[in-house]
Length: 196
Length: 196
Image (cartoon, rainbow over all chains, first blue to last red; front, side, top):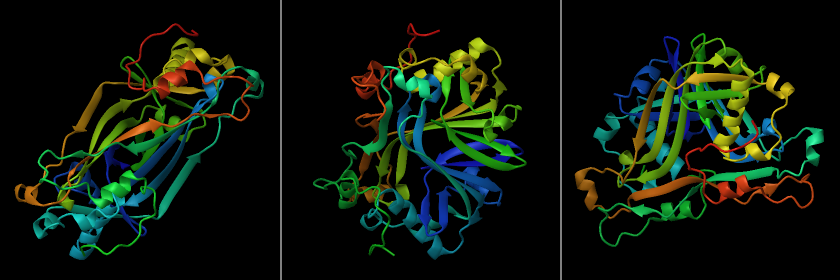
């Protein structure tokens, strides 16, 4: 998930949304009726931020409390993806970005669904990253205080999957979801044979 | 954690940061050298978005994949908190927002730390919320497909705390952190006796 920022007449908007990535291109998508996409498709400046929160940094003083995190901020202008092949490949990138292997398990987009989806491409050209790791940094004299200090690691973790009540009888949780649950989430994306 | 959006000469920025809340006021803080705070303190329009990702919505078709989430988007202008009492109470709100009870365990801010912190207040006046919950919504004909569909719930969870290597001997994990680890995280904030 990313947060997309743009400004209309100087007024900023920050909208959470899913994204896909293929090589050095970030893809956004949604309904052509989406106000955000309607604005972005005209090439206004956009900022996309992805943040992973890794832990709470508990210091001995209130002042030095902090967070461990990784964030990347990307700037640019988006363009509309017009070609059907690139559009289809962008939609594949969305699905595979979240749960690798899922694309091959599900019904691929129909021509009507493809036509009814607005896909925007943002080249990954100008970006900056920030990372904080490690224990708190306290004032020298505070290290003698008998106050617990350290890091509480945080992670976004899946719980047991909840089957759709309308699931066809005897359909088991699929292999892409099982792999995801088993912790194959941070694996770099790899090419797989799948629906074109 | 929230994402703060603002625009400088039409160029949008989205920055992740911690926040505190007291009543109908959201507080932001940081070094007076922070570019973001330097800009916001002059009353430019700001957008603050908080997003909680609750699950992956796995549909039978690629097109209907989605996410369950709760997000709130807040608009307004920030003002600098000048009064020492409000500033101190805002810093308390930051600490208590993340780990309730922590403020009373740690060394409170010194006058120098207070003077060296820029605190901004943003009234919670204009906001909009979006929520998605529940199973996927597939096309009627897709419900017959033998494809697993449902929700993979996601939650930000703490792991075992990592003590600071420079911790004084025999200092145990403090009660605020133990309560946090035991799942008292979503509890509404309550008043406690604590350092003023």
